[in-house]
Length: 106
Image (cartoon, rainbow, N blue to C red; front, side, top):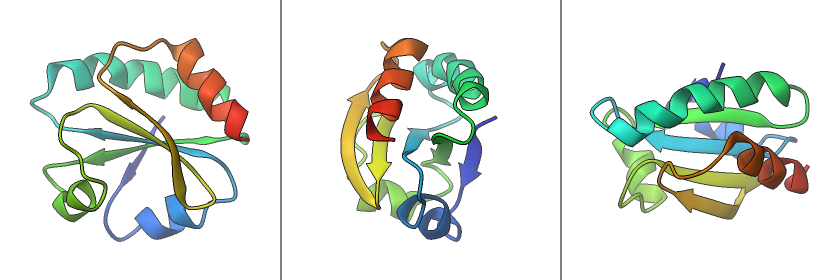
């Protein structure tokens, strides 16, 4: 299951993480976001211990959305050592593509 992030735990869960982290910027009203959610939850179980899957609700954590310049959602950011290394905009992506990108950072 993807971990829900807030402005309070973003630093510890993403920036300070030893593992690569995929951050899904999403919102309740976003159709494509809802389509990709189950894919991310499945992937989270498959890569446990190798990487982390997390979610940021842009309507709740507005400061994070602004900080990472989120213009359209879903926006998937791939972090390693506290820095954004890659990104995907939109839901047109497969679980295998996401897994490959994350494990390449591991």
